[in-house]
Image (cartoon, rainbow, N blue to C red; front, side, top):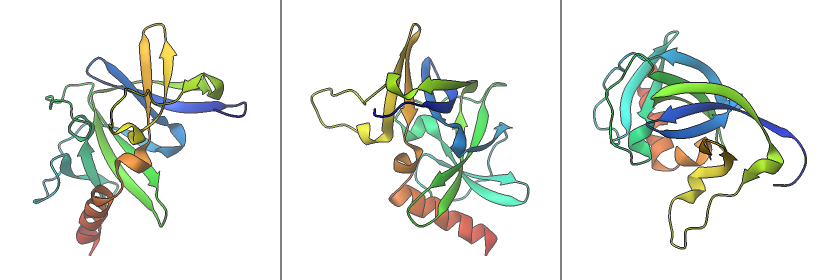
Length: 162
């Protein structure tokens, strides 16, 4: 990546894997409470989370990226993200296994998504950071929740507030 600087992220775990999103997108981190069910959403859409009177569409990040579903634990959290899209900011709840830390990465240490020789959804990855304990995958939240996912979640939000 070009230019000197730092990227501040919230690191979180799904199973043994470590992911991160930029701190600038994280509005808050909530203890897990089961979202209110809304019928006919995509498989990873789990319902609406009440955030001070606003129904926030909530997704299971494990399901969204193809990991098996896991039962919530005392460490399970919901990240409330403000995801910038071309025409609006999408507020979204994301169920994760646990929050690990807030970290800063030197942008020079962020590597591009790996080329594995076949087509895959690497557009969901901003980059990876190599650490002694393994890799941290920096998620591109704007891409992973756009197209029909953003439309569906945004539509559900409007239904609740109508």
